[in-house]
Length: 480
Image (cartoon, rainbow, N blue to C red; front, side, top):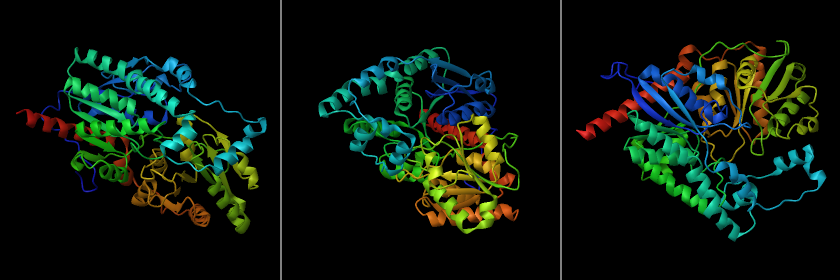
């Protein structure tokens, strides 16, 4: 480990000239371009530089999936990617609809303003009963049991697990794998990797991007589903030789929730950014301070606190009102009507969805980048987008939980200002502070190359390769 807590990869290890093979299990591996696809993609891209050749098992995209086939051209030609069709997914939607409650709404209830207001007023809880009500809307206990007995088991165990395990076993007949790496927390990937680890008798490395068995993204349909997934979590985490988290806060929380797993097996490798030359993108002149939020909004992530703070500053600070603009990039999910509610249509813009490449260019073109996280559970995570913000070297306005993962990163790096997402006055003060930094050409929040290097994706891959070395060295000692 280096002094700053980052592992140093040993390029002089005895078998540095002989690549080791890693079996990678990740359903939505590129050409998928989902948010969860980027972390495993960049690890696979850089692992050959550190003596590990990945063999990736991913799913075959459908016509409706967002994809970019050109991404695969960035991989080392020695890497193999295998796409498998799912077994159960095609009829799953039809079967699931048999158990779903029919909802009737008036025509007026589906207007954009009504949808936005409903989303703003909704209190999202993460309990089995809330999942039944908000996520699944199934009718009664009997139908819940049917869902548990048929739909869930087929979808979670067979749909992706079946083709992934079969593909991994077939590949193992032709080449020797040294270990198995899986990214989650989607349990489908973890189930498949667990069984491959058992059947091939190879060490398992689990990479958890988000919390597992708690948090805003974990919404089991029924109590039976929740209990089953918790049992599987204990089994899989106990088998894993290393469990990697993207936030030290998540690592601490998971260690407390799973005391049966040795804490020494848990570690942190954050998300990161790709080193590249980015052409900044903006349509307005430099005499305007451009605040940008890049990312999608939803029922859990709402823009009201930003709009309220922006409206307050415009009403009370004429210089701010004359020079500040706010843009939302990525889609407002029905919240765009709130811009007019706060009388901000002339200074706040809903740009809509853009490509990943353009989103990075827009981050580089902003004067202040906004992190917005309004969830009340699972706040320990660090947004993957935060690292692209770091690379832009522009002040970050973090409207997040002060004790959460995003606040931890911004404060650790000194890259911006943190304000609690439920405190409009604090957000307005932080917004004004960022604006003053722009007005005064203040470089307080600009990071150096040395500050950023630990978060480059190549450096993070070096950490992962060193972790692989540790596991394989331990395995070798245990076999002697």
